[in-house]
Length: 248
Image (cartoon, rainbow, N blue to C red; front, side):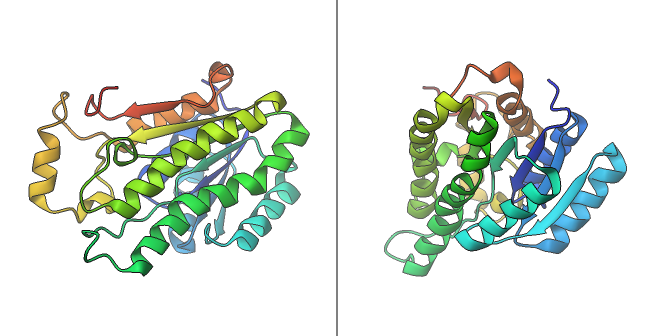
């Protein structure tokens, strides 16, 4: 699957799944815009990918929950590359707690970044993609959005919301040759999951038929497929990459 010459924006690209997606896209020939709230992480990751793959990378500091900041990022990308082919809405945070103990600010933060952030970025790129009559939008949801998870009413709601956003937007833009799909990872060893209680990790492991956690690059392969021309006739779909954890 070649992404040669495609311009891709990846949010939350500085580490974890976002970094793995950026590395896969670079090896497939894409030009990368690596957006992250932590500019140093984005810059260091971009430099490492450029050195390894020789591709063009642009690190950008952006808070995806801020629509005006996102619009400025998109304007910068269009000015530099003259097009946007792929958007990966990967930026995400957790603020886990039981609902009785969860602060309103923890709900707002997770919804603002995970769900509103994806809406902001999609809104900002869609006009350019429609003008091009070409685009790929991939939203990173989660098995928590498919099945729910105790202690994650905010996170599960945000990831379930991403699935609804995916399907609705797919219908809106299909006539302009723009596809919108979602990938729902299972448990992946990243900064978001490292802080989970060990007993929760152990109980989740028992639910995975393949008997192991996913590697970040295995999520990246699925995202790269949706971004490719080989997936041109697939839209509005959710692909679970979870080792069989939640078979539908």
